[in-house]
Length: 125
Image 1 (spheres, rainbow, N blue to C red):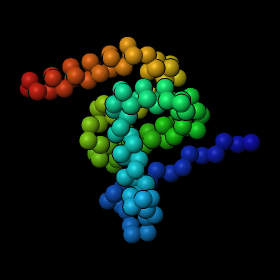
Image 2 (image 1 turned 180 degrees about the vertical axis):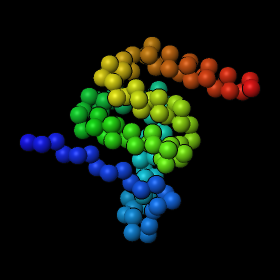
Image 3 (image 1 turned 30 degrees about the horizontal axis):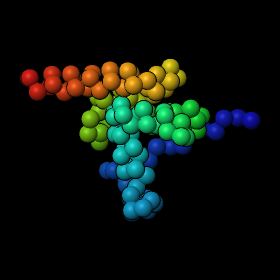
Image 4 (image 1 turned 90 degrees about the horizontal axis):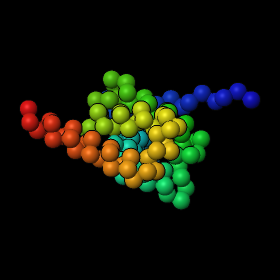
C-alpha cells in the first residue's frame, strides 16, 4: 500500500476566495495558524505529550506536525506573530527524542528559561 501524499497547505490569506470553506467561522489557514503559534509554549507542548491522549506519540498527529512545516515558507511565515519560537518548536517536534523529552519538567523549565533570556535580550537593544 503506497503512502498517501500529505494534503496541500491552505492558500495564504492574500489568495483566499469566498469559496474557501469555513470551520466554525474560520478558514483552515486561520485554524492552523492559531494552532501552530500555540506550539511556541513549552507548557502546551508538555500538555500535548502528557495528556491522556499522549498526542505526541500518535503517528497521525506526528504527520500533522510534519504537514505544518509549510509555515516555514516565506509566504506563510510572515503571518506568525513570534516566528522564532514557533518555528523552533515545530522543528524540535519533528524529532522523536524531543517528543519524549518534553515530558520532563526539567526540559520544560529549560525551554521557558531560554525563552525568557531571549526576550530579555531583545529589550536591551
